[in-house]
Image (cartoon, rainbow, N blue to C red; front, side, top):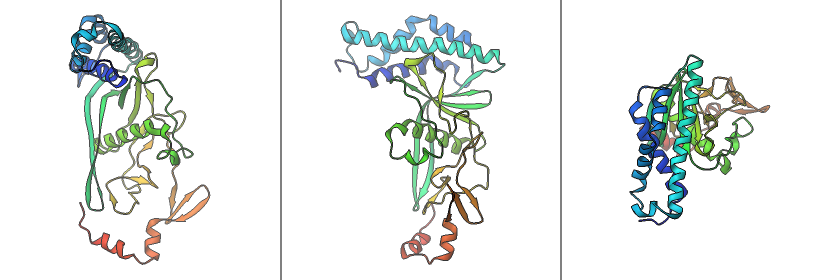
Length: 289
């Protein structure tokens, strides 16, 4: 048994409680009355938090000292989220909309093919909601609030090098996986509920400063251009889905990619004009996935 709680344990306990509370409404519309009822049942909230912590801590250790205080923090985070949820649902109802729970603590996954090898990409999401026809892929965070950087042409290049883009990458992967599993035309938001800042709405990934709704890439659009990569849409390494108010990706025109005023031959044009290398010829003979 552990002696004191770590931050990750607090987060997991809160996740557990929220999952159990909303399980009754999985696949259904969540009403403000339902959430208010859960909020009033404080004993159940405490028992759900205690249920998770009992797997890792001696029962007595949760009744005194630091662990008792952290136990109360877990309970408080759940209660504050539910309070905000009531207000959010009431605002939606006033606008003639509703919130439904599509998935709880579920897995999104898709298999791509790289050099004739199948690679499975998966992610576990805390909750998928549906609001006004838009799927909202949400992640609960009990860590300190930090703004999700807006992704635009100036920040794409930093995705793989700057640690501050870890959360945007996670949210992009979730949106891409949902897109692969449920169709490219399904509008999606991907964001974070910061549980320590429960008065804030869903903090969403944005590809410009005003729009956070991502929609699928139309059929017939550019497929993957990375050698040996199939089944993973991209445009110069960028996600193939677009925003409803689209980002301006590199434009393709008559075999040329035009970006920032510089013209570069596309991969297809380059292959036509140059002989394949031995490794390329070997790759061409490999069986497809």
